[in-house]
Image (cartoon, rainbow, N blue to C red; front, side):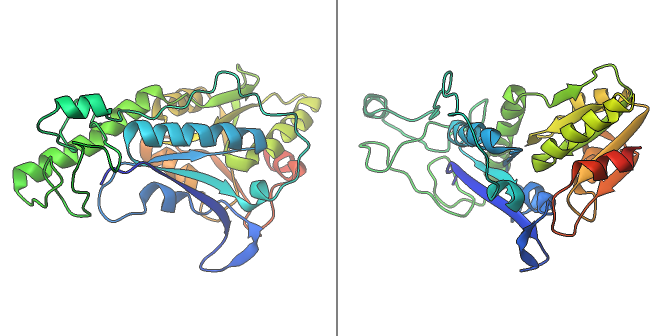
Length: 283
């Protein structure tokens, strides 16, 4: 139906009810791959309190602009943390609602097709109640008007239309940030709320004369393959820091880049990382 939506997944320890009062990062595969059939989605992972604010704005803008679901991944550690913050800087924030039809445009359109294929995959969206913008929104494959249609050529055309959105999303997503010594050949990779402990561990390492850099992933899908490949290719030693048992992000990196992170630093007892644990593991 190409309805803009934002889903927030605040991860806790599984499987099933698991340890519901403790934190984990084990829903990454679910966010990236869960769903019935092929469908476009964007996945973002917020890392701290202020980032959660700005990433949520990004999530809604992307959802509206590209008319698809955006999954915002957090975790219990971040969601229930207490922080003293200065007011969020709202300068420069823009709200994008995407290709929404106006009454004038619909009045001039004698043949409104909600799912008309376009180069970007995004079609003009009418809002409920707009005169001239009536369409069918069905959970089954449909033609340009929204009517049920299982014709082979129509199926290919509509599937290609929806999936084309990801090509355009990928062009506008920011690259992963690299913190620390840019010329260091030791790279720590992390996502989500591991950011704080990793940055603190890097200060411990630097005090010992060990210079490291931190590759932090926020925009998780479409995956930033080029930047991740470039950083890992220039690393003598690489470390993946994750709050899960199966090193899910390390697996995603290998899937999309062919690169293997050399060392996994994993914690899955329901507690967040302490900086000294990362420091000790890298040492």
